[in-house]
Image (cartoon, rainbow, N blue to C red; front, side, top):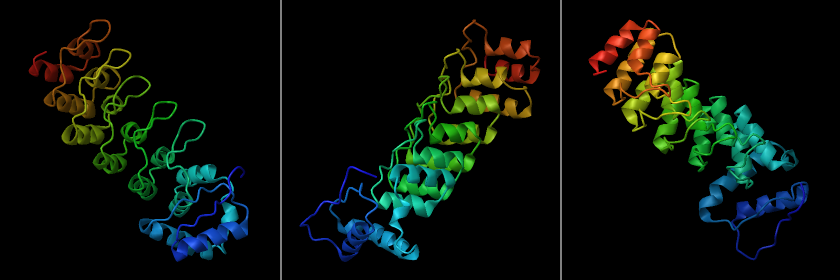
Length: 261
């Protein structure tokens, strides 16, 4: 890697930080390292790096392309390598050619340890990739309740939308992810009447894009109980009740009638 060298500093550095600087200088292969002033709060992080370096015979040459190594480590769920890259100063929110950050890559493989470590380190959980996905939307799309429960305490932006214009609740309703729908409605204020780019609300998607079975009936009931409007039409002016009856979903039709449709 080119373009940077370790700058000299007259700031008094903790002993461990000096050892880190010596390793970097001696190995010579990593030149693109922004060595910032070391605060006492950073001491633990650098100590861990030194410990890992000794375990690996001080092999800092392994990290010749720090951003790429960091993203690959996240994609593979290699939490130790992720932490080492962070200790070496990688941008926590760097992304690949598809706009995926490390925390987004960790979301795809459901590696909870790596994901939690990145949250704790301050990763941006709302940054969306080139297909508009981020960890929150991925958890809703993939029916990943464990991931969702880790994300929610970090206060994700519930208004982030997919490339089709739906919030996280929308694809969960479409795909029949009942546990995700329950979690979102019980623990967030997500918009139950969000209308996407094709004119469908979560309620309409739950009716139109699935089989009308027991799981979809439960989702429709939950949506109605949490404020979903039975009167919002699709872009052709058809109501949820009309669409349910067109498809022969009589149980759903009765739920809608009971809600005032």
